[in-house]
Length: 625
Image (cartoon, rainbow, N blue to C red):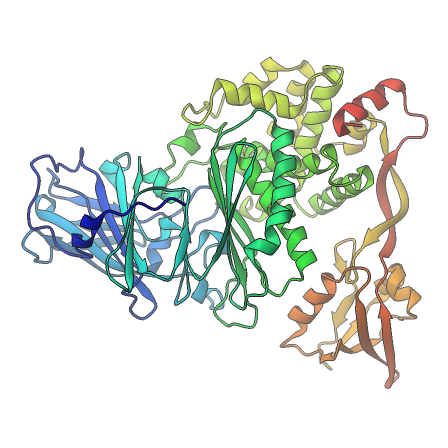
């Protein structure tokens, strides 16, 4: 990262009042100046200052986002604002009214000089009873790490959302930092403090560009003509950016090859926060939140190197494909997003479902996984999707996802949504005799629209149908707009695949998403259920239903630790040395062995024995044989 030294930055007053106003400082035309000071934290809260320029009206409304893009849930970030104050040009406090959780109305606005307040972080509150935003969209304030999802720190004025912003961040000189936000100045003000100054074209660019400061490791590398910046915070130094770099490089190199000429950004940042589960103030919402040029990822620090690599591929590959949509292809609801009262797009099948499909399809297409592994992932999504309302219109669910009963079906966008992507891909390949694909159609639409030209929400399906084939119209009408469940067997048959009952891989804790361990509510002991006989690994160890689990790898099971212990069992991989002590009729049984792959009987996807030449041709085109 290039740093420029501007000595005059030393004279910038942190949280100071301007003594002189320019004649061109009218709020509608001036930049909104914002300041965050990481060196003046009080009670785990960061001070923020907002200087909007002069207003011509007397009543001014300032807002912190209620909902942020990509979250599809109410965040109410105004909850974390404390000690809000407004000042006139003489330093006197102005009257204001807090209208609701996220809104402040300031009176005598013509005299408004600046706003100040403190921001509390969300990570520390995740273990309380409060409904806290999903961790990757949250904020962290700690002595050695700051996760600045800026929608949690900086708000907007109703009339000035499209104004340019400057952001000045004061931070300890020993900190490293990274962001895709445009940095225009950097200076060391004294031996302990440094200042970064960033610019943003509008408020959206503030919310779309998180920053991570602290004792972090940063690795930069190129994938084609995209600069990838990987920033890692591991509180106990269990993992490093250097150790993760190769996994991310190989994955993104394959993704770039898969995308071909589609380029939407010259830089992409990955901010990885590794959560120490031993801490009581650590985030536990594992996953990632996409931004146009970056993603914030929260995962467990206790993961092994192999487990972390697998999670990074699963999570980050999904987020990176968001450069296709919504970065290059999005609706007016996304482009002109209302943070206070959003109208949501009808097309989560596109923004999340298609992206999730691409994140798995590219791996088989580019040879990172084999065909059977890909089929198994598809089958797993079919099975998980059954737990959601399969009769619910995806269009209706998307448009109303903040409300019930749609909110509880949101996760299905990653299951049935991905399957919708698969079906569209197969149908397009079949009707084009293998010459076109869902990705090629997305590229055509991206060329037509792009980052700065949104499509009309109600017209994009008809436009996509017009570009393709009548069968696509039928599929949308019945299964995405309509409420008819998809017959996946019928779609898979087009590429010479079928369902077959055979041994399928499973983990050491679940059979068809049902746990094989339960608790006796009276004795508070944990035991294996009848389903354990369907797990090949435990059956081979002689485990029987009603066997009580006394300890796992030396840790005695209790109500207080069972979630963490069994989560570890769920993450076991073949080749791991384990010791499990069981109680059967009050006698101890020791299982000391090396784990092997567990199987169960179930449905799997596999090739039809007598597939036609056309079916095989389309399948080969689909999987790049």
